[in-house]
Length: 219
Image (cartoon, rainbow, N blue to C red; front, side):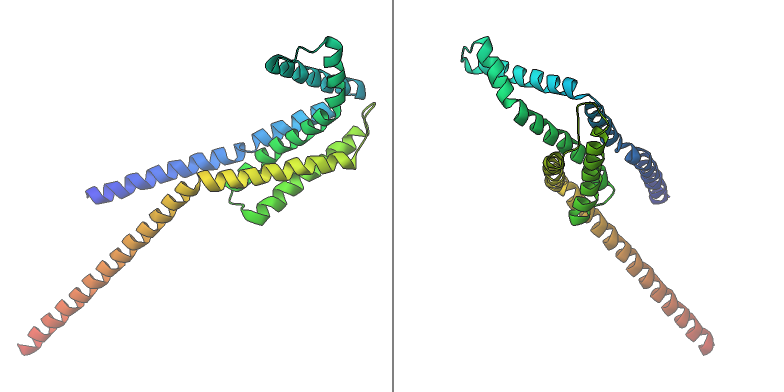
């Protein structure tokens, strides 16, 4: 009786867990959708606003570097360095955006069971396809235009993000995989033990019936 109640309780727990996973798994794509919206919003800025934003970020980087390294640069020197690094900062921002997007896309796909090359292919097609669509969208924005070069930079960030997800998931989920594998092996051993026990009981019952039949024949 206690054993039966235990299996009923375990079945209820497994059912609740599966229901929670079924509800939450689709929500794992929300960060990817949010990141796509952020990238689209940046691309919707006109050329002047986008350039000013890049310059402000570059200027802030130089100011922080000047304070940390105690270079004591003049204001005009900070302005000049910020102007010089604006282009690489802008392209690094491109790569970082798509690195984050790739992580946000790859992780849910990994959770859904996509591994190895299929993960690289599907996540890569989604992210690079979005990068191409985003560059096309910029052709309709004042002072902006599509750039194959930017798509290439975005693609580097994409495949770096996918590779990062694969490495992190492989490293940190390895104990979980080992525990799951051990659980499956343990359940198989238990199932095999139950089958052997049932087979042993059937044989004993058959042997008992044969003995009873032999006794009746003697009478």
